[in-house]
Each structure stands twice: as structure tokens, then as C-alpha cells.
Length: 68
Image 1 (cartoon, rainbow, N blue to C red):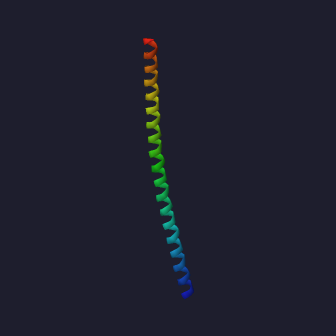
Image 2 (tube, helix red, strand yellow; image 1 turned 120 degrees about the vertical axis):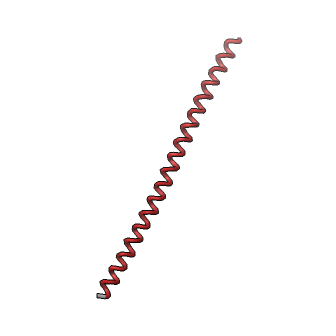
Image 3 (cartoon, helix red, strand yellow; image 1 turned 90 degrees about the vertical axis):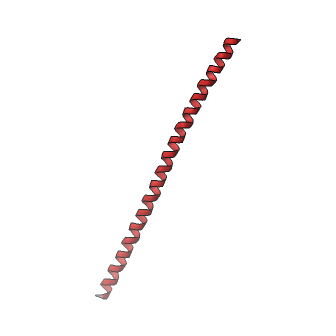
């Protein structure tokens, strides 16, 4: 009977460790997802700024051609 209790106690501890590992993995996955989202927003902003810079450079080039 004592061996069964010990075995049950070890099983409960093991299940607790697995649950803790799962929670930690979930937390890490959420942090990674947030970082990826932040990078996506940053990349979109950079792309928008590059597009705006290209448009402005094109305007400048056209203006210079008109003055020649």
C-alpha cells in the first residue's frame, strides 16, 4: 500500500512538472509571437518609408529634368 502511495505521489509530481514545462513553453511561444508581430509592424513601417523616399526622389529627379 505504501509503495502505491509513493508511486502515486511521484506521478503527481511528474504531472506537475510537465504542466509547468507546458506553461513555460506557452509563455515563450507568446513572447516569440509578440516579437514577430512587432517585427512585422516595423518592417511595414520601413517599407512605407522607403516607398515615400522613392516617390520623393522621383519628384526631385523630375523637377531637375524640367529645369534643365
